[in-house]
Amino acid sequence: MEDLSKKTIYPLVDTVTIIAHKGMQRLIIKEEELKWNSDEEYEFLTLQEISFQLDQLGYDRTYIVWEESGLEGNIYMYGNYSPPTWMEHGKTRGYA
Image (cartoon, rainbow, N blue to C red):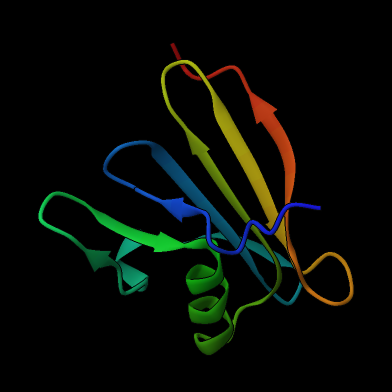
């Protein structure tokens, strides 16, 4: 199985939706809640950094990260299995 924890997510390149839980409530996480790394052009986080920050912010697992461009997209899930691991949960055809 591929280790997806180092997969880099760029919210300014792709449309990114992050979903977490507080109890039974499913919440969309605002990008401003996370501390994004940046290089000269873009902000980014790895999937591992996203799950670490969500844990630190007190969200309950399972976490879902959905990244989508015009032609394709990926849905990643964390914490649905033991031990917690990032897994590809699905693919989309993009928004175009």
